[in-house]
Amino acid sequence: MKSLVTTSSSVSPALISSAGLDVARIREDFPILKQKVHGKPLVYLDNAATSQKPQAVIDSEVELYSEYFSNVHRGVHLLSQRSTDAYEKAREKVQNFLNARSSAEIIFTRGTTEGINLVAQTYGQQHVQAGDEILISEMEHHSNIVPWQMLCAQKGAILKVIPINDEGEILLDEYEKLLSERTRLVGIVHLSNALGTVNPVQQMIAMAHQRGIPVLVDGAQAVPHIPVDVQALDCDFYVFSGHKLFGPTGIGVLYGKKELLETMPPYQGGGDMILSVSFEKTEYNVLPFRFEAGTPNIAGAIALGAAIDYVQEIGLDKIATYEDKLLAYATEVMAEIPGIRLIGTARNKASVLSFLIEGVHPHDIGTILDREGIAIRAGHHCAQPVMERFGVPATARASFAFYNTLEEVDALVAGIRKVQEVFS
Amino acid sequence: MSELRDLYQEVILDHYKRPRNFGPLEGADHKAEGHNPLCGDRVTIYLVIEGDVIRNISFQGAGCAISTASASLMTEMLKGKTLTEVETLFGEFHAMLTGDPSQPADPAQGKLAVFSGVREFPARVKCATLSWHTLQAALKEQKEPISTE
Image (cartoon, rainbow over all chains, first blue to last red; front, top):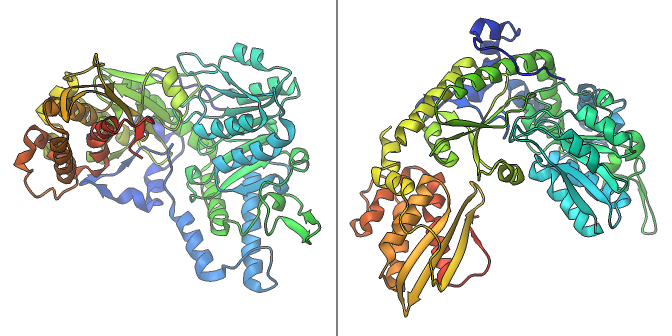
């Protein structure tokens, strides 16, 4: 788990580089970062929405399609074997990345959203009855709210919500009280996309397990920023998306404990998820294939593997250390601007800076910054209940990756001053 | 900076900071809610219609400078206008917003010409038209909130 953001006032470039990251060299790996937007160098601070791709990821898809592409798990010919090997190798990379015990615990999905829907409609369908409860937090992304609402509607179950404080932290006492005999599952975000809060998921999982309740962790925002060890966390399910981890869109991962996955009914029916089919009876395939019906996203999985290689080569510990300093610097210089209000001031934060400028709607902030070449997100961040909690319709959000620099934070500050000038 | 100045003209900023005809309208006989789910903007339009003339109009809601100013200016423009005139104005307004930025704004637009800068910002056209779409829904007595999506 990362340390608190406590870096003092004078974060110097020297201190940043001491994190051991050669950011100038890293930026060379991302072709998209070299461009200009509206005549200004692109400052890409929308990494919580999606991240940019290093050349190695782009090349991995080109290599597949130009050299060894074929369908997986079904051909005796060489290309099919090579594609299958690369696809399964990618699964092992994910296993290693999450420190899962077995590659059979790694299910490829379309993304975080599909992973959560899969668990809701398999494990949830099997274990949730009328009057049972699903427990989520007030800071969840819509993708960790709506699938549970759908399940609750199907089953007559109840969705319960763990409240948060004004800093954007889970109220653990309230959480403890909400864990009831009727709770069938806890769904909790690891790193909030709207607030930047890093939740104490390990502790929360232990608290749920004391009562025999399984926990799903939404890691969509966490995996690009925090080293994740599913065995140390002891989570029952962990889901994330490839595209926020510098990989392609349309590929994601569901990790599930083998003993749980083995007892769950299939999600979708079709090819590849079966051992044998007759019109009388179908025998389902073993893990992980039972949950991967149809031709999978072969290129997506292989390119996700390349993204994991890339991130691991840099080192997530180094990335987390560097980004902490970047966020601390950004938080500090933003706080000095009159009229700025930060939304999400948890002690343990990563990567995300949600803010408001007095008298200016976030949408207008986004438009003016865009003209300065600065890409941020303006809106509710698919987390409308969090916005409601803080009494705002929307926020502006800058979110960082390891390829961002102190100079880009300075450009953001200059952009914000321009916003204030236009609206003065 | 000049494109930004074209977008955020003084009149627009003035109507954003001091919206006219703001708040619920007593005796309103038509009302509709509009919503832009992309940015969270919400607006409610209240109307008093006599025959085919808009006798009174107001709006309430929270939104960006463009959507708030557009709603405010719309309410100023439309008092006393017939429903046919409203249709024509909206048609011309929409054509201006999505038209060629190099052409001068249509003088028939009057005050609404201040929104001609929006042409350079296609992502913001929905902000400028939200209140107009909501007005149409109010005139049709639509029960469901309308959405820009």
